[in-house]
Length: 185
Image (tube, rainbow, N blue to C red):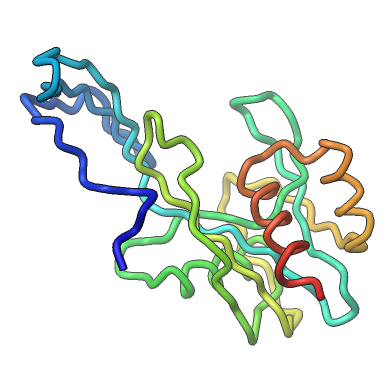
């Protein structure tokens, strides 16, 4: 069945150039021609790859979350473990690796909940949201630049934070809405 939400774009790509290439992102400038108006459109794209976000649920129904400084917004943010899926890695393998690296938990069961594009207006980044269950305590393997605090919170407390609008990160909000609508039965 054809996806009703997405169809192939018919803009003609006229040119593109890479204007920045960093360790995590590439920025491109592009020009497209709109075939309906012949107008030339300028765009900037941030190419960031794919990421996994993991909602770890303990056997007693709590969530494992992390608190981490997020320099773009100047805040320490309560979130779920997440990270980029590395080249050659499956989405699930990337999620399993990131969960263990950041929290010191390994999941025996990993379920893909959904995929989202957090900033589709300017970025190709796709985030895959997973639910991790049957957690086993192992050891964290933080990168040298990571400053992460692991926090276990009751599910009801996290739901209240979501209900009050205290959780503002898109992936966490979407993941939790999905969880409470479809998984928490």
